[in-house]
Each structure stands twice: as C-alpha cells, then as structure tokens.
Length: 361
Image (tube, rainbow, N blue to C red; front, side, top):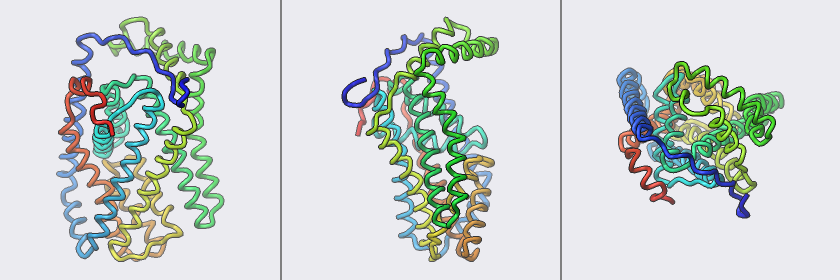
C-alpha cells in the first residue's frame, strides 16, 4: 500500500495473442453498432408517442428546461468523476473525455435495450476502460464498488424522503432493502482478501469455467484455475482508503440528488408547485420502475409511475403530465442522444491503447 492512499499495483497481464485484439475490436464495433441501431429503432417505434409528448410541451418555460438539462448533465458528470476516482484509487487512470464518452455511450446502450441493457452497458464500459490501459481486475473492482455506492446512496435518499413524509417504516425499509442487495456483494469483495476463502472460491469458479468450456472456446485454453486465482488475488489487493471512499459516496449521492432536483425544475418549468415534502418519493417511484427495465428506457411505465405519484401528491393531471414530459426529455432523450453521438464517434481500440490518458482532465 502506498503512502498516498492508493491501492497496490497489480502486475501487468500477459500479452494478448494477435487474435485477441481483433476479436475484442470486432466486439467493440458490434456493441457500438447495436447501440446506435437500438436508438434508431427506439425512435421509430415510439415516434407517435414522441410527437404527442412534444405537443404536450407547448407553453413551458424553456429557460427552466435548459436549467434542468444542465443539472442533469452535472448529475451524469458525477458518475464520470466517480469512476475516475475509483480507477485512480486502484493505481489506474482514465482521461476525462474518454470517461465521459464511455459512460454516456453506456447509458444509451442501457436505455435502448430492454432487460439486457444493464448487462450490455456494463460489458461496454468494462471493455472500454480495459482498452484504455486499466487492468481487468481493476475495472471489475471499480464497477463493483460503484454499484455498491450507488445502491447505498439511493437508500439514503429514499430514507430521507420517507422521513420527510413522516414514514419511519419507509426509512427502515429502504435500509433493509439496501442491506439485502449490498451486503452479499460486499461480502464477496471482502472474501477475496482471505486466503482460505479465496481458495474455495477459486475451486468453485474453476469448476464452473471448465463446465462452460464445453461451449465457450475461450475457457478451454490454459490453466483455468491459475488464471482464476490470479484474478481473485488481484481483486483482493485493492484497498479503498477514506478520501477515495468519501469521494465515491458523495459523488454517488450527488448523482441521485441532482436527478431529483431535475424533476423539481421540470415542475417549475410547467408552472406547477413543487411538492417538496413528497418530492423524493415521487422521484423514487420513477427511478425504481426504471430500474426494472420492462421497456427500453422505461418508456411508458416510468411516465405512468411519475404522473400517478405526482397526482397522488396533490397535483392536477394537467400539470403532472407536462412536468413528467419535461423531466423525461432531459433525463432520458437528451442523454440518449448525446450517448448515440459518442457511440458513433468512439475511436477504435488501437487508438485507445496508444493514447490511454492523453485527455486527462
């Protein structure tokens, strides 16, 4: 462990075979193409609904809409900085421009694909960060910690929202739900540091890998158990010191709070009163439905959940519906459009390897 609080460096991975970069490069291209195609299909399929939404925006105060868009972009930038903090804590790094383009593109992939969007987005982010010169173990660790921080901070926001409405049971429920989701993942991460537990995990994962090797050629080559042990040892070597942990938590919390603030600005934009006491729970209704990924980007279900929650909080439907449309315009469609541009403009893998941190900010 270095004195400046960064994690120990992991030995560099063995050089790739000539075929490996080509395979990964083709997969990157396929992921980008699939993301862009999904966006196009999304717009075509929902074009009538989009036209109806646009008609519903007549009469809004566009200055407030612009402010809501800025807040949403800052919210996304919190996630960008969080990823950079985690990579630096593990001895890696990524430039500001590269991290920004990757997360926006990943968000577009996630929003454009139902059910598998989150997995495809994570795979895209993982490969991009690895292609930028960070070790596979570090990227996996950073994404895992980011997920834990995001879930825990969401629970804090929900607990605060429940407390604002006087619901102690709701606040406790938020913490219990978070513990159920976070503690198993945290336990696995901590288990990587214990030699005996790690050895047991190596045996289990190696057996699964050998079984899958019947169908996945990449798992047939080389000593699987040794590779798994090296990976788990690398994951267990990372340490998140207090400054980096605090920064990760604050940025995750800021992401959620700013997104909820975007909903408040959307209400102001349509001239509706902001239900401050229940605002967080109204916003959470949309966030939780969106996480279920029943439709691409939660289109239809998120709008229904948010509008219903706003009406339940006392707003007339004539104000609730336009406010939801403004919020979704800046929190979904704006970000999807930006991500689609980044997907098209993402440089090839070779260029990423040769310029790992040229755009550091």
